[in-house]
Image (cartoon, rainbow, N blue to C red):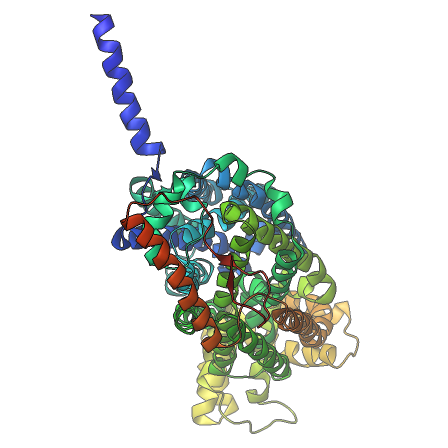
Length: 629
């Protein structure tokens, strides 16, 4: 009996193993299935980056919880990105071991860390370890997912496909900002943001586990320019020497053109990576936004970026050119960065003034990035289509190294951010009092105008609540009656002592702002009425110089980003591809005639010699056709 049952169990185990782990397709899928696989890859990428960027939406709340300094946080970003730089090479191994299972297992790992790990971590070191695990996996998936997109997308639809892939980082950031904006006010513990993202991730992992497939190496290791080549690719796949095609991967892909192109886009994206990590802090520190409002501005940024990534990709495919879009996007990014630098000089810029700059920056990044992704994968294929993931690993490695180095430089450029972020609650309260000061009746300001509703709301939202609520009640009544005594009487009895503290606090705060000394005895007098205001006076001598210096330092960082955009703009002229849509169309038509001739041989049952398709020329000049034998 045992002899008869063993083979049955082995055979069943084999079928289950094949269903779950052998995900390779031996024939090129029809369009509907291909779109489904592409959709799963995009969905997985979106969720991965949603998880990776959640920390950026709650940084103002998370740092005080862990007693984590801003400098420690930046160095954590350095370490995480450095780890991702080297694990990008693991993603490059997907040329040999496959892409799908690597992607699914990686996404499951970060989902588990996000759902179970981070919400139960109570030390900054524990969070650092968890975040580095996520960075480890992100480096792998940064390579494996665009490689899957490349496999399933012919070159004539490559920019559209890469536009959808680029939705991963962008919609991931958008999703993180939207969820934070909508839920932070109701779900006060910031850890809930990690739990929500972890649950979403597990659902997507289940979808990918059931539905994601990949092309067999013999199919994916060839170049496809259009859908017409499917039958030709399958026929030639039977004669490809896979071992020879994938030998010496790094030697094949460490090319000057690939390195220069990767460096150019990495420098261009300095402003993007600053955005996903510290832009929320920027809106809070420079423009005194609440965390929810800062995420609201970011939502506009990521929303327009997401839409335009796809639209620009479709337009680039329609015109069959990449470089003109990269040029326009790079130039536009420089102009918008100049606008951001100008806006720093105006800290009272309205909410929608900030939104406008964010929207234009998202548009500029989308215009350059999607065509670049298509151009880069085409350039990799021009060297060796069998090593697409290895070529993408070169880009991933350079990108992560540049980002890591940028976070080493950032605290040396913006030195005051550490003071402002580490004392964020005090800095926010101080800015709120400064905004209310013109509306407070006092010597030299006996008949001020009524305080606007935004000032009253900010005072009521202050933490701890006592001083802010007392001043809000006073200004609210004074705005109606214009009578100081009536306004004093309108303050609730429980807050009367806070009013005495405010009367003593206001001139001392003004003295500190003007650089005049304030003694410990004067602060002690304020402490008797309001310990909160006394604490603010003690930290104010550090905050005032930091507040004054911070705008100039942020401008300096935006200048660094503008320099990176300029380098990219110059390197565009050395990248591959046509400038003229007419010339690109002629190249494509020539290529299609060659493919048609090969397909005619197949239909006539003539033997097909496994010769590589015409590949993309590695030059970007107008001399000679885009596809050459």
